[in-house]
Length: 385
Image 1 (tube, helix red, strand yellow):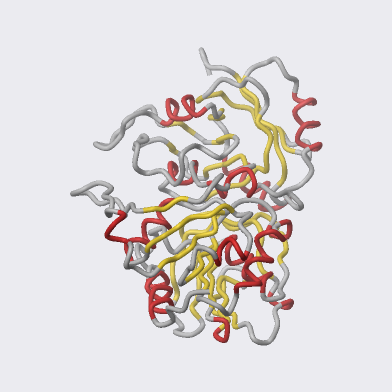
Image 2 (cartoon, one colour):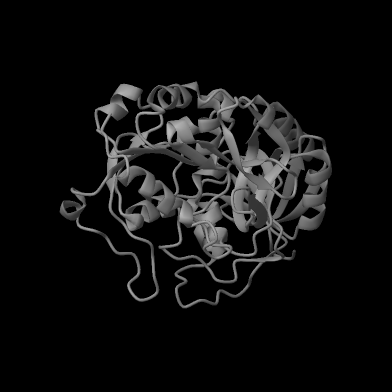
């Protein structure tokens, strides 16, 4: 650690991890829920996913930063994690698309990282004791006891609404397609989208690749703030409604759940991750907090209709309580690791959702059929509300 700034990660239960700082200098402690992600790839997408707002991310893969960072592999306009924990920051950036190192990327984003940490120890501690609040600081101006106190004072992720901090300020249209090697990211001219079926996407922290796949499958897409009322959505004359991913406790989101409940049955609905939890509540179910959540790129999920197992990307700390669901709701997918609900379908309301992220590519495309399923549901039911 010679020449490096000492850094500390302190958990609310008093456990302390020491390493070195990288990325942005600590102007103040970074406080958030400390969680771990087992993905071996996609750290830039993870860092920029709004669903991670309010969290300090511990990567379990030992080397992070190998392929650097670029301008395309982002899921939003900025980094949303509050801090980064790694075993080792790669000293070499080796990728033809890289424009800057991970350290430079975090420094530009104003986010502090801590390296030199036994991330296996962090992960096993969280697995045993549960995800909890933590405080991260690089430097010696703040003592360990003070950091522990800050982590404890932060409480729990339960009861916290982060959607208001990440949703868009006003509606906007989207016209980008997915990136590919030959063309990069292409745009569809807005005038050519006019005749397409119209989906209103409720932005609770929506990832850009979800929007790109909605356009790619054949939709015209309008994104609206999470606080948009049922009447506000109706005024846009949607052919379908999409409920997005996002951060925080889904039980705090009555202002998203109630409009969804009012509109269910009028047009097809599709929800992903937090959107799945919102749909679950809109049909009468409840959610609960998982001990340490599901975050990674290799989670097996079984489609109960076909018997097929999909390898999925996941990022959630809450789940839908299966026992709270009414009889007209079908559990369509189950997590094979712990049996939690991974998919819902309400045929009479033309609504379905998944807890995992079909826009990501671990399988690599095990779950892309869900976007086509939504498109077929909409084009077979083009009745405006």
